[in-house]
Length: 188
Image (cartoon, rainbow, N blue to C red; front, side):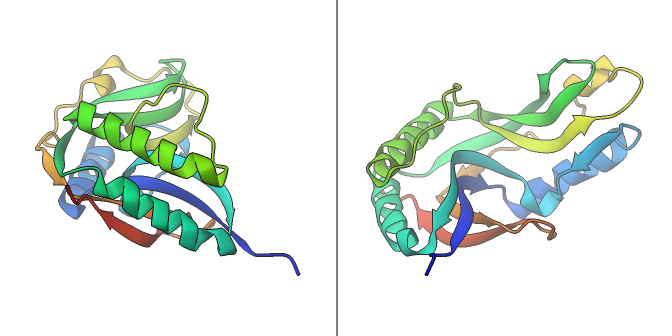
């Protein structure tokens, strides 16, 4: 009998207050932009490691190594910075907001998770780690995106304390699309 699997990734969930502020900015300032897919504001997060389809039988061992990775780190602060994109600036594939704050602590947490999951067969992405919050995908507008979008005039920049990371499962076709499977407190 084939083992069932779930599509998983580790991430830092944004506090609800920050999710709502980002949602307000999207609704007020980006309302006229045409993207094929807008992220549900309840799904806003900063990805740490995409794990892919994981067999259910592997999840307990995965959770064990993630507990150990979390124990190596203490809380740190992050904030939300300017908008950015992947692809061409005028017609981006992905529209996102960047992450500011104690980026060195974020990068160290990312490295610990990569190292902890590698013995279980999980591989890091080949491209460099670029922490961000995905807002929309696949711009379909006929006019280029106005340059003012890249430097938003909003109130999303207040820092927050990151005291944990989560293991998310993807639930395609549902809103919100991501479900927390487990939470990993930063213990040091």
